[in-house]
Image (cartoon, rainbow, N blue to C red; front, side, top):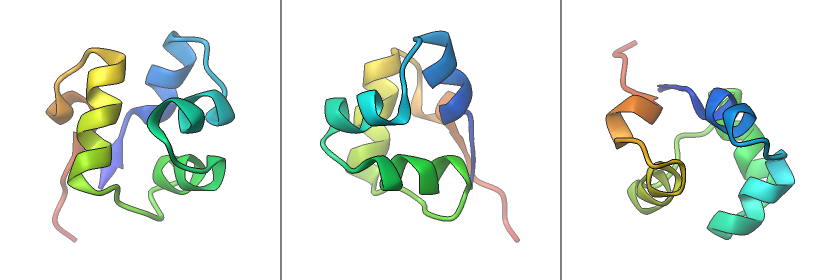
Length: 65
């Protein structure tokens, strides 16, 4: 699943660690999501979208393989 998490993080001047602490996951989880190696749970996806004040569809884009 493609995402704009790294872009949103940069816009809000946050490190991976800052973001991880705000949403209750590890920095490694944020890194894996940004590298598209891990798809977040629906709950985490909503937390991230809410934190950045964007729609979930703006943050994550599903593409069939």
